[in-house]
Length: 155
Image (cartoon, rainbow, N blue to C red; front, side, top):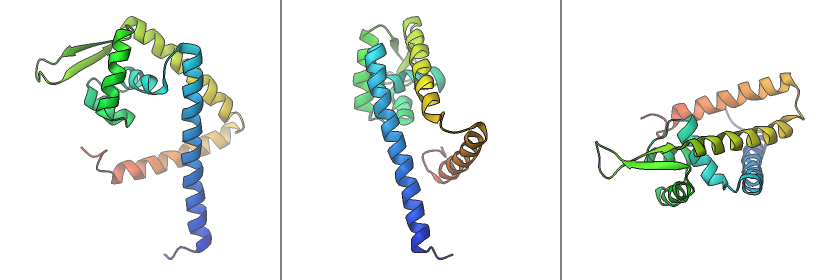
């Protein structure tokens, strides 16, 4: 199938809008998480990776958050000093550390997820239930396509 200029333009516009939406949502989250919880967005991503996605090592957190291991290490140290997480040496590999949230960290994660939900709900309020369902279905198809074809998701 040969793409017309109009089709190429449409694909690029969709990709640009998805990227722009994610970027603006991330910036917005950074502002209100910092203001309400004194938590950076990267710190939220790390807490979220540990609490919701069973990322238990610095390497798995870096993969999930798409942050460098150095950036994750710095934020983990800040979170640990704030009492939100613990880090213990792995019994299998002394170079690896097992991460877990403290009760204070779990409480912070729940508050942050609640704030994120509130803001996402406000953003998506411009769509009705049928539109949200359709959007979810289409995004899921795209997600399945990219994860199926990505070396990062096929371990």
